Every structure is written in structure tokens, then in C-alpha cells.
Image 1 (cartoon, rainbow, N blue to C red):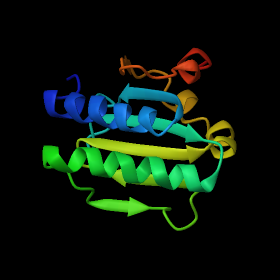
Image 2: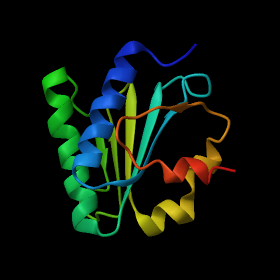
Image 3: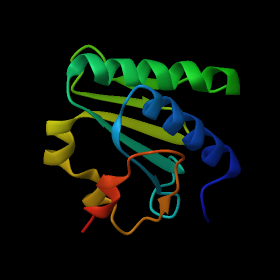
Image 4: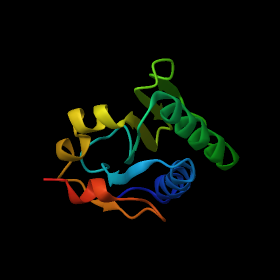
Length: 128
């Protein structure tokens, strides 16, 4: 079953918020066929801890008017990998080094990519 309309709405809004804060390699994946706990992942990178936190804050801020509050938030203090769980959507904002090392795109390579607006999707091209 593909990602729900609600998940797609959250993905689009969250991706736009990340791009507005200059996130790089913004990629959305439909993980609904692989996981029962969420419909989609949004992956975004930043070159430093301050920007990682700023992107995560912007995503939260933009999703709040849609009635979405994270049920879980992890990694905010360290600023290397912030995870925001909105149930239908899990957002991973990673420092560029963590993004390269953990390579979540490769781990979830069998999942369909969800088109995101005005995003730098260079990370999707490197999925192998």
C-alpha cells in the first residue's frame, strides 16, 4: 500500500521547510511497504550542527499548522542527526558526515522515491 495522502502532504511541507533552510540532498522515500510504523522517510543534510538543528526546527514549525507534532524527537542536543517522528512521517536531518557514513538511501534502496518540490535530490542519484 503506497504512502497515505496525509504522509505525502507532510513530506511535501517538510521538504519545502528543509530546502528553505538550505538543506542539501533532500530525499523522500515511501517506506510504507517495508515498515508498519510509518509511511515515509524524509532525509536531509547540513554541513554543521547549527544548521542541522535549524532545519529540524523549521520542519517542526511548518508542520505544526497541519496539526502534526512530533511524538518523538532525538539527537537535537548533539546536532549531528536529528530524528523527528510524526507517525506518518519520520524526518532524518543529518550532518553531511553522518549522512555519508550511514547511507540510509542504500539501506532503503528498494523503496520508491517520493518527488519533493524544489529540492536538491543529488542524494537520490547516488542510491545504489
